[in-house]
Structure formats: C-alpha cells, structure tokens
Image (cartoon, rainbow, N blue to C red; front, top):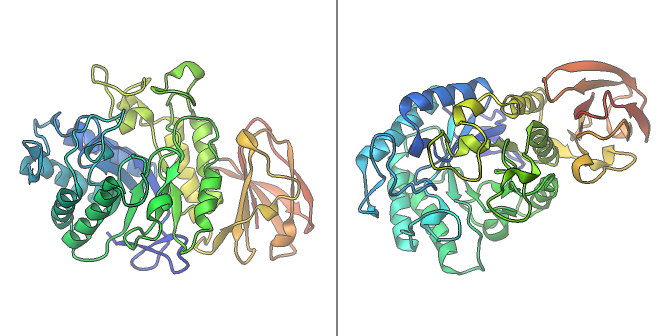
Length: 431
C-alpha cells in the first residue's frame, strides 16, 4: 500500500504517486481489545465492501484496556508498565494490521487512549504515561510498525487540551516525537481531540501535525461542524482538516448530561448524512463515520457504554454505514484536488441548524455541488460562478447513491431550482 501525504495546495490528501485520497474512516476504537481474528475478518470485509478506506483503532483501548485482556487472554503491558510490552498482545495487533492491509484498508492507529495520560470522569485508566514514558513507548510502537505501509498515526485520545505548557500537553508532544524516531523519519500524523474541540486549538503549528481533526461530538443535533471545518480551513499555515468524530449512528441524543440516555431519541442515518456532507462541502478532506455499538464492539452480556441499542454485528449494515460510501463515490467522481467551499453559490440564504445548506465547487467553475439537508422546496442558485454557458443540473440521492437528470439551468445570479422532495436531503450537481 502507498503512503499518504498532504497535497501540494495543503488542502487534501494524496497517495505517494499523487492520486487523490479521500479519507473515509470507520470508528472501531475497541477492535484490537475486544475482537477475535475471525470477528475482525467479518468486520473488515464488511467495511471494505462499503468503501471505507481507514479504520480507527486504539492500541491501548479505553474500556479498561490495560487490565481487561483481549480475547486471547492477553493484556498489553506486564504489570501495567509501558516499558514492558506484552509480545503476545501485540502479535494480535500485528495480525489485525496485516489483515487490514490485505484488504486495502489503512489503520488509523492511536497508540493510546487519553485515560492513560490523564484521568477524568470517563475512561478507567490507569494513568501510566508522563512525557518520558510516552516518548519511550512511542519510539517502541513506532519502530514496531515502521514497515507497515497501512498505518496512519493518530496522536491524542479524547481529552481536553489544557493551557500551553501544562504537563499532559507535553505527553502528547513526547509521544509524537517518539513515534517519529521509532519509524525513522516523518510519518503522517493527526490528533484526536475531545468533544467540541479540534487539534488546531493547541497543536496547529506543530511540525508533526499533518492534518487537523475535529470532534463535533454526540451531544446535540446539527452541531455546526461546517463552522469548525471553516475555521481551520482559514488557518495559516494551511493544513487539511476533517471531522474525526461526529454523531454516531444509533447514539442517544442528549445535549445536557452524560451518559446520553436515549430519552430524547437517537441519531439516525439522516443525521449522519447531514454532518458528513456539510463538513466535506465546507472544505474537509474526508470524513469519519461511527456507530455507537461498533466503536465499543458491544455484544449482549458485555459491559456497555451509553445504552447501545443492538450488537455490533447487527449494526454492521445500518443504513448510515452504507450511505456514507455514496459520499466518497460522489466526491471521487470529479476532480477534487482544486475543490473549494463556496457559499456564494447560494443566492437566497443558506439556512440554519437542521436546514443549513453547504455548497462547494471546482476552482475553475467546471462543476458545483450543493447539499440540501431537507426542509427546502426550492433554492436560488448563483450559476454565474460556473464556467460554462450551458449548465446541466443533476439530482444526487444521498440515500441510494443514484443520480437523475434535472434539465438545464440558465446562467444567472439567481436561478430558482425546485427540490424533488422537501422531506428528504439531496445534492444538486451543476456542471
């Protein structure tokens, strides 16, 4: 597999031979910790068929990953000492990394979850890392996977960043330095922040941070991830950015208190689609999907987090997981390394909250795409931003991934276009 790099305009990702790489990740935090190899095979094959290309997983998992053994009865460290890695545990990780590579999947590898760095109200720890131990562990795990072509390194692990110079900010820096030294040079690396925050808030200027990541989170409907992406899109120096942890499909909605009981309902596939399309059209270089049962690999009888409503096996074919692949295919269907966000395509307002519309186009005006999340029976479009006088309109259905013709559109400052159904979300393509 080819290594992943940042494109020349610093907006997107490419492979070593220059081909565009649209990051479409699935969240499988507990994959190394809770799954047998036969279960991993089922999971990875399902995700490959759904057009995911990155799997996010944690070497030292959140759910008591240092003390609760993996399915083989192994824990990652001897006597909870990061200076004594357990070879048997990491052979299991090795096998999963190799299995993913055989299927053409990258592993977004988090060396540790944040509760091993700082203890808070969620996560069982224990804290085992300071700057020096994090550096040594980072160097060890970097060296172990230095020859794995399908590793994308993800520093951090869902913990808030304190003020500059405080102790555990230095732990993450030390871990990044160790990984790079272990690998033997620069590696692709991003950082997983906590809910409502982004890597740019603390680490934007770090030379190890190749791509910014936000966690728009699971607390409220229509969290404005498009604004999070926009904020980082405008930062200097320019770096790619994406939403690395948006709302999980079938996660309870509760904007006020943990543990997110489902009394206010669940995020479903439409909520997943809205966050994905609006973030990508705002300028993101890809997107990450998650399912609430899959990230924790929940099965009945196993300790669970925040009321999962089905087993991970039952969750594999939920509609959002299938539909998110349609987004990747849509973006890849046209040249996109010069794609830009452009709300100027909207001639009569962009809406707010659940009705917020996002627009993107090729820099040369050869095409434009507008995501309409529902609640609109018509929109007014500024087609003068397109390069041709002959503009074809298409409707792309993000539920099915199908495209249908919508006739031609006049080149004008305000062309009114009737939406097929105000109850559904759509992508208008102009070319």
